Image (cartoon, rainbow, N blue to C red; front, side, top):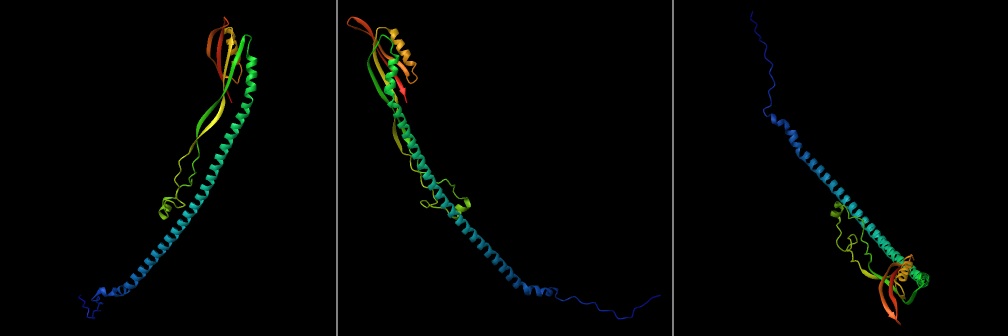
Length: 242
């Protein structure tokens, strides 16, 4: 059996002739969106610039604080260097005074030691005591430079000190030298006569037993004739360190 539908067909809704016109609402709001984005970007840039300025001011303040601290420490180091120089000079003076005090006792101790060491058959004819002086060059301490290290690379870029400013290290001065003369001891030259070389050797052995006598040696030993008597002339030298 064949069925025929005679009812009218329902019309389907037609698609819009211009589908793109649906986005007219978005397009109309595009300038507003762009303006909001631009304002947000400007606010972000302003916030970043403000933070950068605050960071810059903070680094500059930190640099100024470090330079002030460096100047203070440099002054303290200069005072310490001056104190060390004064201390060294005082110790040197005390050493000189101590050696002079010991040197005052040398003549008496020297004569006593020689008289105790002279054996029978020795005649002393001359005694000479010469001070031994030592010269040395002493370098004076230079002015103490700043010991705080330079600022970090970022801080130096922010505030790099120029030559002559407080934060810049001063060029160190050359060290001055001075010649210091010190008394280190005495050189003794003793002349005498003897009838025998053996007696002279005994006399030198006695001198070598004295702890304060150093480097005892005979520089002259000769036989001469006096009133048809043959005798030995000798010259002995040694040192007495202080």
